[in-house]
Length: 290
Image (cartoon, rainbow, N blue to C red):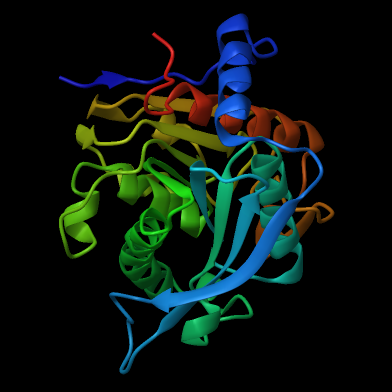
């Protein structure tokens, strides 16, 4: 049987094992703090969710050096690449690339003409997006794995809100099948303030280790169902921030959006980012901690 998870207590700074992992990673990928490469790329969506072909667009960040680099796919929430959300994703991307990861910041809604927050306003559109964006996640995985400077064994996934719900779906053992074809799972997955209903009421099997971040004051996607989830297979961790609401990593003042509270919490932003990095380092194939 699966076991229930519990919210974690704030941990101390990175321990000695994780610091060793950082040193090994930097040596293996030729880490340079001076900067990174950035290009805009496009690739075909295997599920267009509409008539005709859809070419997904993304920002591809590359650390200096030859690689191969571990990589992270980033997936936005229901608002798409609205300016504040895009800035938050770019901040996550720059943090990760400075620590030796390539990053693919994926836009699912722009190419489908679903921008401006329209998806947020409809449960049907949100449900549909969780379905076709699971395909997008695995399309992004395959795209990265085909690049010569990417370590195909070490591709990770992070999503915000609706993208976080997609990240949970991608972490499930059924995730690759749900994407329409068999394929390898992500090495590990981080979900920021997802809709926990994706986990359902029954024990599920995780193919990828999953780390969920939520805000105790989130009245849009309350995190406690995630904390009570029962899983088999890979591990599930849930971190809940007592003073945080939805979109706590987006640099906007506390405000109401569609009747729900959203707004930045600086502590939750910085702490979750460090925890996400440590979680990905922990699960690097070939460098994982014992």
